[in-house]
Length: 195
Ligand SMILES: Cc1cc2nc3c(=O)[nH]c(=O)nc-3n(C[C@H](O)[C@H](O)[C@H](O)COP(=O)(O)O)c2cc1C
Image (cartoon, rainbow, N blue to C red):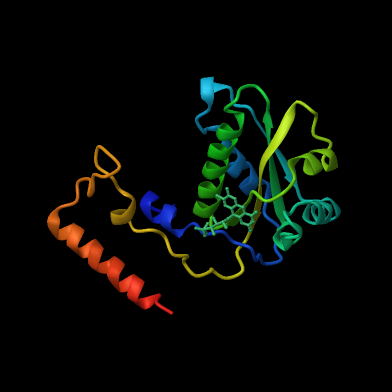
């Protein structure tokens, strides 16, 4: 089990998986983490459809996508979890996205890779999986044993996005020294990334 702060930083969107099934026990642990997410009025509007059938995954992969961009990792991942939201409140989607984050962190802690898929037509996926009309599909998560670890994408530094009291306020709780260090880090990153 990883320390939480390290886990949060180590989780990556994994789009390549090795050809090894993910055990039912691991999938259950991932879904278990999902069900402990907070939800508006504790409605828990989520349903998790676990897809492992190669043909259903293939169809999902060829149906999911936006503006001609398809996600090959939907068909190549050993497991795809389709998260459905019962239309109980206007927060049902938010609830499901929080469940998704719990699930991705749990998967990372188990040494598994995941990728959040937001670019698809929920309606087409709903029809394909025969999801009843009272539900939407906020997201799909691919799950599998990672094939390699992608490079860490650039993340905006805290010093750039932290505000104190008003949007104009800067540097919550950072001592002058730490602020100077983080500023230096930012300048070095900017210089390194200059074309
Ligand atoms: C709302 C949302 C939608 C996303 N949609 C897709 C998607 O459709 N396909 C995909 O491959 N990755 C998708 N991603 C993953 C992002 O590309 C990824 O989180 C981002 O590049 C940062 O990389 P990291 O997750 O490794 O930190 C999505 C992420 C979020 C939060």
